[in-house]
Amino acid sequence: MNTEVIKGQKADLTKGNPGLRNITVEIGWKAPSSMDIDASAFLLGAGGKVSGDDDLIFYNNPSTAFISYKDVPGTAAGGRKQFIVALDRIPAHIQKIAFTLTLYDGENRRQSFGQMSEAECRIMDQTNGAPLLRCNLGNQFSVETAVVVGELYRYGEEWKFNAIVAGFSGGLKALCGNYGIEVEDEPAPAPAPVPKPPERTPLQVPPRTEPSSRPNIVIPPPPGSAQRQESAPAPAPTPPPAANLNLKKIELKKKGDSINLKKSAGGLGELLINLNWNQKQGGGLFSRGRGGVDLDLACLFELKNGSKGVVQALGNAFGSLQQPPYIMLDGDDRTGSVTSGENLRINGSKVSQIERILVFAFIYKGVTNWSEADGVVTLKQDGGPDIVVHLDEHNNRKGMCAIAMIRNVNNETFSIERLVQYFSGHREMDEAYGWGLRWVAGSK
Image 1 (tube, one colour):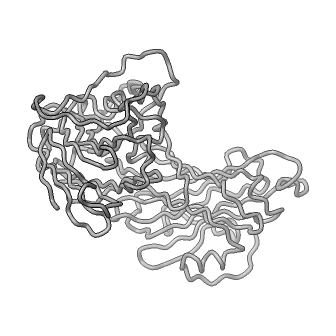
Image 2 (cartoon, rainbow, N blue to C red):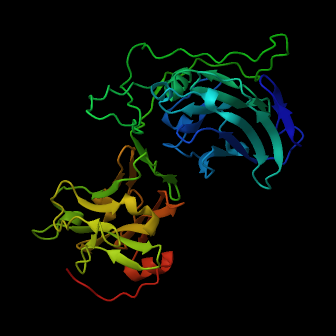
Image 3 (cartoon, one colour):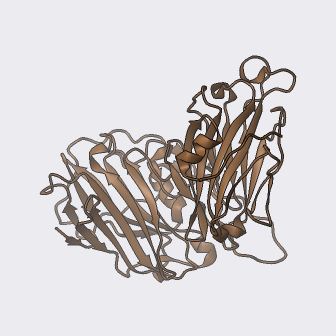
């Protein structure tokens, strides 16, 4: 089956395909490379609103239990985004999934979807890649900076697709407002002596307030009001209150969660990885004499030329930012009393020279009690949200924790994957991730 639909049409997906469980929703287009286009999916209840922060799937919140977002590498003239959806795992309260495109800062850059061409949405069987449905978005846009492509929706026990293909002004903020998420404008930037392109910065989200002036956008019905209107059998409940969404940071919550860093016009810049932990004194992990715990941040690295090594305080292997391995440890907090914790710095301008980095922490001395340490690792990037990994899975019998894997993506950016896996020492961790280094006892 490969059904063609146009704006306003609805089509069956699961009816006639009883074995269909997982689908890929792919949106592709051609546009000038200066246009920064994103795709998002809104998970909606019967009232057409989100019910919580996790109900917006996009580059800052790329996955939940039944849907995940993927940026597919494309050419300079176009882009592709994919959503993998497990139909049989969608909770009963989710009645629709709206797939959208938004243009970042389109009004200020004088850009719009009128400059986009050859845009289409395809739905495929994720298991075997067989095509199920195709929707050509056409060339009907002009000044719009947001597009609702279509909706996957329940109809009784089945799933159908509604080709909305409706454009609006206001970008991601307008769509968030329409679906029940309140988003505050960024403060106006201070004037600069030399103009420069606006940087990609996350939206600010205010505390919940009384009714605000956010745009009231309503998705229009499809053309041809005389056609039969379908609705889910269940009556619509009272719409939930608007959700406050934090777009300033991304938390990788589950093992295997990953996300690509957003590259700005000037490249990645310097990346800062910070390890911090509970500074309390007294029993447990922090009772080792006067000096307290010695919790160290470190990394294994592999460069594109094949060289491998470690950056850590143990053995005074502090690395270098301007020379290989382009990674440097700021210092060594041996007491746990430095409130800023420990920092690894990565020279993002050398991304093409770096193959992968394994970020880890270990307890050099003291009682192995990760559950009391309450550790958190934060990756900070210029012009992008913080990426946070909490060490909230514990194994107090082992003194080393592999926290995150950083991998090269097309020599342009890095992907960050949550690990939080515990090991007895360097050699065991090395073998688990295939580094192949020779280890000897060391000290600092």
